[in-house]
Length: 326
Image (cartoon, rainbow, N blue to C red; front, top):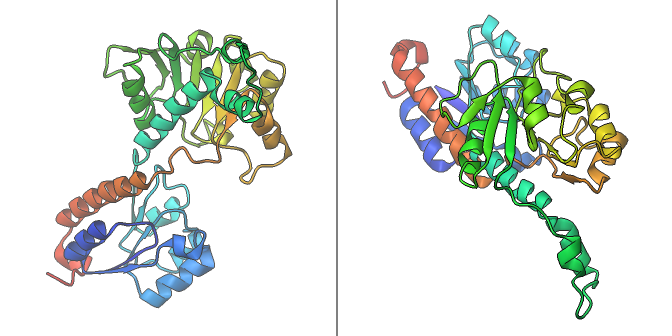
């Protein structure tokens, strides 16, 4: 079997795949400066005569899959395989694997870092200092930038998968109380309270969204829910922009109905004019979709995906895999 890998994949992971499956061709998208589009991916698959594909952000469209129905599997180095036409793959009997939780630690760490940065007014105080506002004998900075501690706050999470659970683990030590809404998860830790969606918004000092995108979640967070938040509560979204009605969130921020927001995702990337109204607001701490961007995440997705692929290989008859070393 020949595997085309366009995702960032460390040498140890590639060697492990070669030992099991045969041949690996490494054409990482980073060297292209962007993800491969459908036409480029079709060309790569044709040129390499690959029997399987491991991707990250490339456009694995219905056309790509139908032109390569012989693919044994498609590995997707993402929390969800949202860039892959999974229904077409299933129709053609092509296995699709992905890497949930690959960025859970990265997102959880940035959540903690940005919450503390927001609560302690770190960014405006840095700008104040750089602007030479510190006068001799004055206590203006101590008074103007006195913030709040994370300890003692209630963090409410909408969605309690890998990221939410990792945040809970990290923040319990401050300590913080944890509440969550997730119809598909139960509280494995008695310190985490499962509650209703409305109760998360009503009772939390920090409301953090950790939802996938599907027909039931698009626009799920709207004016009705945001209006239930405390006036000094902070809204956080490091998941997907489309699960939040941005106009409703913007209105709440501009009218000071909530303390502010920490946002890593936007309806349009690059942002449009409305997104920039959020980004530029003084009560918003915004980052450019980097919550999961660490070097370690790439090692995590290799470990997760290789474990799945090697387990799958052990369950398949040797002749169905066309393994060159068997």
